[in-house]
Length: 142
Image 1: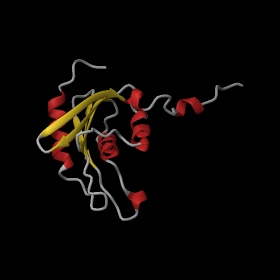
Image 2: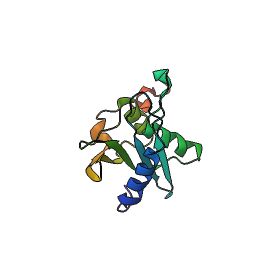
Image 3: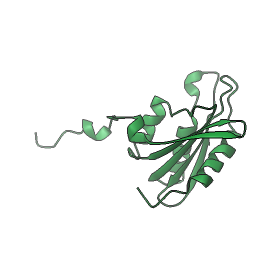
């Protein structure tokens, strides 16, 4: 992990990005922000679709933005949800994040009015024994 993470700008970006969520079916807007080793930040929000399979979560939106910008090395993630209990990324988001950084520090933030509840964890704690594509690679010559 890099030097100490300044979480506040990431929380503010996730809060602001959450305001742009398109959540007409769940009424559960989520915001995410991702910091990379290059110092760049990427925001994401959930974008729901009437065809539920077409829905994309905030965490994956942030990852897609990072990759589209040519970045590849996330060093911190913030996820902002509604309520006094912070929600963690769903299974597919955890797996997509694991493609890039399994020990990624993750700050989960639950927002209830002006109150915030924060929980710091890692992706490795949220997704133990993550599926890794390299595990499918067989040695050559055998």
